[in-house]
Amino acid sequence: MGSAGEEHAAAAASSMSQHDDDITDRHGLAGVPDGFQRLWTPYRMAYIQGGQGQVKDPETCPFCQGPHRSDEESLIVHRGTTAFVVLNLYPYNPGHLLVCPYRHVPNYTDVTPDETAEVAELSQQAMRVLTHVSQPAGFNLGMNQGAAGGAGIAAHLHQHIVPRWGGDGNFFPIIAQTKAIPATLSDVRQQLADAWNSVS
Image (tube, rainbow, N blue to C red):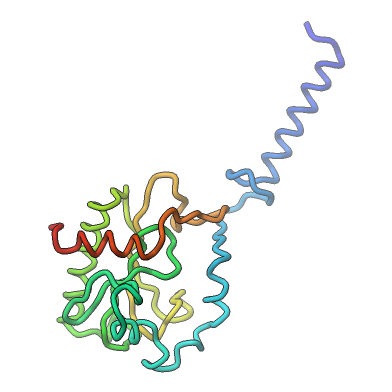
């Protein structure tokens, strides 16, 4: 049997442990746990500070200007007829791709049937290529419509394709801690571009 002092110390440790649980989330970070996760992406600040005002017209739109440069310079993985595939310059995970129509249109309702079909086909092929190259366990696909909907560049429609792995985060791959991207964008672009036409 332990002494009264040992019992008191054990009770205090248990109380302290419970207190820690009460003021930290499941990642061990400070703050009362709630239903929200935290998205920390400090490297995006230079982009975010530009705001929606950074794209005023097709001449200032990176999705319009990118196809006029080389694939390597613009991080383009594949060029289709009405749409193209490009690496996200600010990826949530390695291999985070965007599928964009060439036309400078803001909404999914603005694209033609041909553009709709090609965006879908390129999205499917992007998933196949990413699976071949990096074996993700899943994907997030989506379009953010308008500034209020979370679109970083609301003026030009683009579909996100984010490869996911178990344990990489929750919904977005960077939550609670800054994520290290263990490959350069140019290397990832080259791997995906090389595999694009050989994967079916």
